[in-house]
Image (cartoon, rainbow, N blue to C red):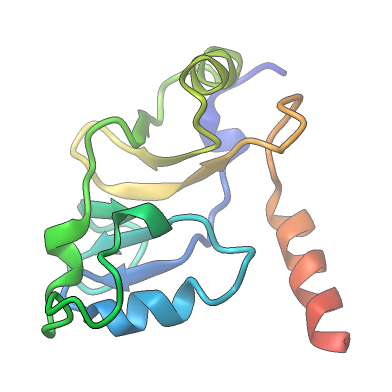
Length: 141
């Protein structure tokens, strides 16, 4: 595994606008294949990453924290990003050591470029084509 993380990142991760209500984030997490939701100003790759969410970040439904725009209040960036210039093998080792399988890839200005997704086996990264083929297989069922 050589090269930088940008060569191996998913280029079309799930990105929502930071103003999305928690109910929308929960709906996205209804898919067992979604593990991290990325938040930017308007929900697009190329914008500054404002936060990341995993299921454990969300308060229980009905806990009074479901007001519109509150998703960002539960998000974090620290410890969930990797710089685009990082070597992929260094990133893989660091992710395994930290027990992390997903990191948002950002440039030096904090703009979201993609998502680095370590395979469950730990021996490589998920690919756009692999994700697309799994999505297509689920739609056929």
